[in-house]
Length: 539
Image (cartoon, rainbow, N blue to C red):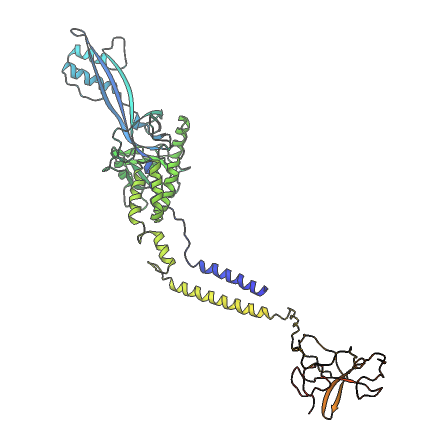
């Protein structure tokens, strides 16, 4: 049995080896790495609302009231927690130009019918009286001012959702920097997107220091719409720190002028957009620049601004569900990706990336592109590409057959192990007394009634008999005999060894009991044949 157990161990080991022939399901990192960030990318538009009152007292005193909306900036931002905290650049939500001057020029030109450019510069008029009143309208506010001006900033955020939100939601400034290219932190105002919050983007711990580290940039060139999705492009970072002006970009193969390419994207609306690390899909910086130059402000400045604004980056339930769905999608398990993306859309119905990938997954589910379908076909011996499986299957079958044959042989040999004691044979009804090889010793037997030939059939009991003396009743025929001292016992007669024991016998004669030499059964005095086996008692 020990050998049989060893064979089972060998069989189990080989079975594991055979099972390893089929490739194991390996987790592959998603190739669409920007998908982790783009759902959290938003369009930001900042506007200054200027309420101005012109006090015209050249003739009769007249109050002229106007309200103007002056664009301050626009660009791209990124949501960094489910509550809607966002990061962008200061220049997107603030301007160093004085919007009050713009409003003064516009209202004065419209009321007095004079030509004044609608810009942010101070101008002079040829008419001294009108020029005096114009200069008194410009800020700063004076006791003799001819204009009363009130300015409020409105920030509107347009999220990346489907269907497009044409109105957007309002946000307020939580913190801005001392330079236009410093990070700015925003908070939403009165936004309610359900208990799950908003999709967020993960932040990296550090910026890659290696020369030519691949990254991607993302953002919007206008308000998100079905015909205006997010813009994504690739870039490469130069080695070293960011420095005063930010980290530079450079194509390691010098095929593309990346600063010029990215500068054009900044001018189109990607100002303040996220710079995404290529391996983990985390944000390592924000895009800045314009014209023929573009740079990146690093993650350290971003995290510092968030800490000063008391806004903590975090990930929410939407992000957790979306990451699971992305893993299935980018590893081509489209059948498993379908319910995963459906779960994301239950949490956030406007998730554009989840909706697009769900549509693709439903179209490819169960097709030759579905990895689950490929593995199912491989397990049934229907290869759909790659090396054929039949050599592995045949080899595995031969190994199994060899192991089974070895196990059976070891088991049969173990059943005849010489170390195991052989069982004692049980006595049977046909067990015969051993044939004595030495002269037997006569054994007296108790008196028995004469053999009755009409009696019932003899019942044979499996037992052994003692060795009997062998005499010859007739020449040439050996007969086993035994003395029966009580054979002819009669009342009043001596039952000792010298008493008479039958008719025709003399006192002192000994009556001999005969036995069959074939089967050992007792013979009657007049039997010529054995009543049991039929062997003749005489020849």
